[in-house]
Image (cartoon, rainbow, N blue to C red; front, side, top):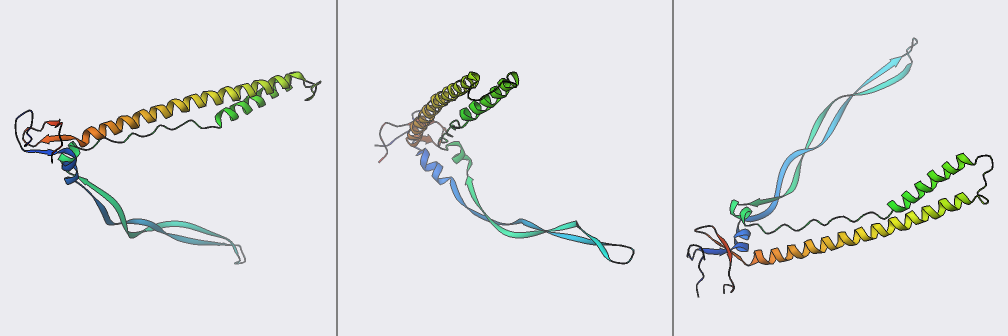
Length: 195
């Protein structure tokens, strides 16, 4: 059974992954590049009235580049390979850091403690003053609330990352089954795979 383009009827068709592989190459390039600098210095001696060296100054007056062979990875794509390139993998979203709620609770604790200390300077006692207990309870509550909020946000980010990864896998599977007509340029999928 021969396959033909559904748009123009041409049998000059090819699989998209094969076209991409033919037009994609990787390797290394070795070039001469500047890898450092050698600095030239000028040294000046300052003497006192008896000729003794009092101070020595060292000043940079120039530099000479140092060249070396550098090996870098290279990639080459033909125009057709760029056109039929596979879908790009998703970049995972970063999760929120775990210490922000602890830091915010401690900052609030410190700020409110100083504020209470200003109002009760003459009769302040850490063990007898109930206001510090309020500060500790409020700071603890803010820490727990922030931790729960972070945990919920990280769960949402993990779900978004999983959904993006699943969509990428579906797109990649569809890309692997695509064909390209070399006559009219249309892209299509065939139900049966070519033997």
